[in-house]
Length: 476
Image 1 (tube, helix red, strand yellow):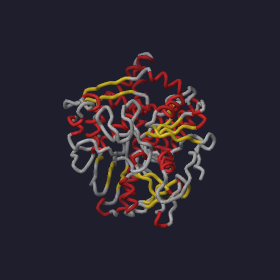
Image 2 (tube, rainbow, N blue to C red; image 1 turned 120 degrees about the vertical axis):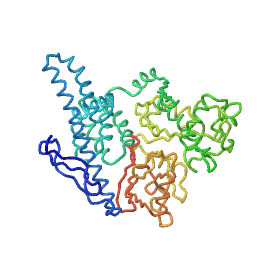
Image 3 (cartoon, rainbow, N blue to C red; image 1 turned 90 degrees about the horizontal axis):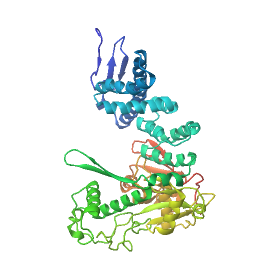
Image 4 (cartoon, helix red, strand yellow; image 1 turned 135 degrees about the horizontal axis):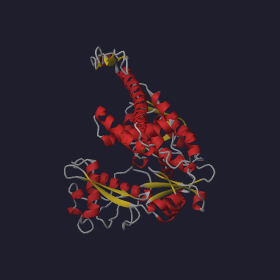
């Protein structure tokens, strides 16, 4: 268009500028040179950019939905029936959008589907996205996690998830959504689980450069138990002389357990080339959950030799079971790192799976029983309670599972801090170090609610993940 001028202006002074009178966007957005900003101002600018990005994502969702509707409408005007227009309209819209965004048609089609879901069924989520209160990934999580919620309850489900989304990561939002969905789902979890177990499977998908993806669709307690076992073994092998990353170690161990001769000669496995196995120790937290092998392993105890040749490997998984569920009730239990599991599975794990730490909760308050005592080193049951309560590292945004975290005093013992639930929190080694070195400061005004202050003075408040709907502080 003659006279139109738009595009990037000096990156030190402006993000985007356009003086097109007829163009879809007009105006100018600018900022001070990056090199002129101090640390606090730079963080504020990043925050503002995130808000801008969220606004852009909301407008894109609306536009993609509108383009699809216009394309379908155009086909209907040309005489095509509604079904035909719907069938081909979105494909044609994707074919138009793909080249504009420089993405494949299939990717453009997925964007259209996601946009329609948000715009047509989750207006409050789109509004929150537009205002920069949540990110696009948060918005999609709210929409996708609504599957199975009765239609009349979706607005309430959406409202509750949005409140959570404004102050947490996508991973933790998904976890909370699963719990909330269990409360609203009209069909019992036990019934749904029985249906899904029939669909269990293993699949392999080719990837480039001689690689492939191997995935398994399994009951949650089995999948998480397997992952904990692999992760525990990898951390046992991970040392100063080990050149491989944790990710590479996990992959090698997974392959060895399924394809190599671990049972007869563990020293020949690819995961065992550096260093030699047999130390009998685990690199997990120095004090924490009971440490015995994952169900199905023939190992006798933590540090013993299992049939697969690995030693000192424990699958540390928490399952929290309300007392009434053990007695035959229907309230879901909680599987660490996953969320609600059906009562039948919970009872089976509590009664027959020694590798699962069993924490019995009060039927009314939801509090863990018998976790009293006050001394410098938290007793094991108190550590277990804090890990179950926190579920992950309590540093804002960190998703390291609490089983792999250290239990730290919010107010240091040396400064008068007590060893009690309202002065303890789970922190991974890195974020524990940040606190010890004074980079981050934490306080716990009420049990489980931790207020964290960064080096630049920014404050974040995180809340404990609920064990179940009626969870309260434990008795002391």
